[in-house]
Length: 502
Ligand code: 6YU
Image (cartoon, rainbow, N blue to C red):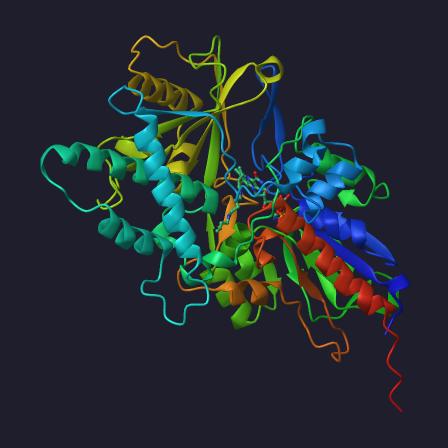
C-alpha cells in the first residue's frame, strides 16, 4: 500500500461535513473539495435581507456548550456574541425548545388565552417526552410518533359535551399547532412518518440556543479560509463516482487509482478515497446512477428507508412592527383544527395553515422589523412552486386573519427558502422514518469497502448530518461526521503497511 503522503483524497460537498473533513485530514498527497454550487456552506446559508441578515438554512447552534463542536469552533474563530460565552447559558437544559416570550393568535382574529395555550403546550411536552421514552421498547404499540401522540391525546382530552366543549376544541387546536411545530423540528410532513421507537435516540445538548451575530455563514467562510488555497473548487458538480476500478493519469501508467470522479462539466479527478457528504435528499434521488458500480443493496435500502423532509422559512419585512417590543414569537392556531381530525389534502386552498407562526428577528436595530415564519412538509414544498407575489399576498391575508386587522399593511418585502427545489439538496434534513431505525444511519455511514484487509480499503466514505446517529439534522452532527471520516482515513494512513506477501 502507498503511504498517506501520496494518497489522493476527494471530498464531495462543501457543507460543514465536507469542510470539517477537509480541515481534519492529515498527510494526504493531494486534497480536492468539489462543491456543486457557487458557494461553500451548503445548508448553512446567510443572505442579506432588510437592514440585516437572513438565515436561509441553519439558524441556531442547538445546545451551545463544551460538548458541541460547532460552538467550540465558532468560539475559536471569535464568531459568537458575549451572551453565548456565559457559562450559565451553556448549562441551561432547554431540550431544544428555548422558552421565548410569545403571543398566540387564533384564526378568529383574537389573541388566545395564554393560560389555555400554556396548558396545552405543557401537555404536549409531556406526551413528547413519553414518546421519547419508548426508545428500546421491544414492541412499541404503534409505529409512529404521530399515532402515539394521537392515542394519548384521545385518552387525555376526552369529549366532554356541553359548555366545556369550546375549551376542549381550543385545547385540540393548540395541540394541532404543536404537532406542526414538531414537523418543523423533525423536518417531516407528518409525525405519522416519524418512527416511534428510535425517536428518543436523538440527543439534545445543554445550552441556550444561540445565533451568529455576523451570520451562520461566517463559520464555513472561516473554515474555507483556513484551507490551502485552491482546495475548494466551486461550481464543480459531481455527476458520477466510478469506484472499484483501475484508472490512470494520461501518460502515467505507473500509478493506479481505484476511483474516478466525473463532474457535470466533463472534468475528472482520480482518487484513492472519496468522502461523500451530499445530502440524503440528493442520494435518494440520484444514488442509482451516481455510483458505478451501484451501492450494495443494504446501503441503498438505508437511503430509501431513512426520512428526509422539508422545512422552509418565510421572512417578511414590515415598515412598522404590529407586535409589542417584548414579543419574540407570534404563534398561529387554526381554531377548528384537531390532531384527531384528518388534515386537509387540498394544498392549493390550505397550504398556509401549515405555517406555525413567526419568530421576530432580534434585535430590530440590526434586522429592521422582520418576522421569520416556518412551514414544513408537502405544504412547504407547494409554497416553493408559488411566485414571490403569491406568497407575499397569502402571508398578508394570513396575518390580517390572525390579528383581526383587515387593514394591516402588507409586508414591505419577502424572502423565502426553497430547499426542496434545490437540486443538490432536495429537502431540509433527515429523520428516522417509520420502517427505518438508527441502524440504517450506521449503515449509511459505513465506508466501502469497509474491510481493512481489502487491498484497496475505504474507497468511499460517507459523512453528512444524516450519517450521525444521535445528532442527525444538525450542524454539529454534520461537522462531527466529517471529522469522523477524516479520522478514519488518518488512521489508515498512519497504520503500518502490511508486510509484502511472499
Ligand atoms: C442546526 C438549526 N435549522 C433550518 C433549515 C435547514 C437546515 N439545520 P450540506 O447540505 O450543508 O452540504 C452538502 C453539500 O454538498 C452542499 O453544499 C451541496 O451543494 C453539495 N452537493 C450536493 N450534491 C453535490 C454534487 N453532486 N457534487 C458536488 N457537491 C454536491 N441545524 O444545527 N441548527 O437551527 C438548523 C435548519 C431550513 C435547511 C437546518 C439546522 C440543519 C443543518 O443546516 C444541516 O444539518 C447541516 O448544515 C448539514 O450539513 P452537511 O454538510 O451534512 O450538508 C427528536 C428529534 C428531532 C430531530 N431534529 C431536531 C433538530 C432540529 C434541527 N433544527 C433545525 C432548525 C433549523 C431552523
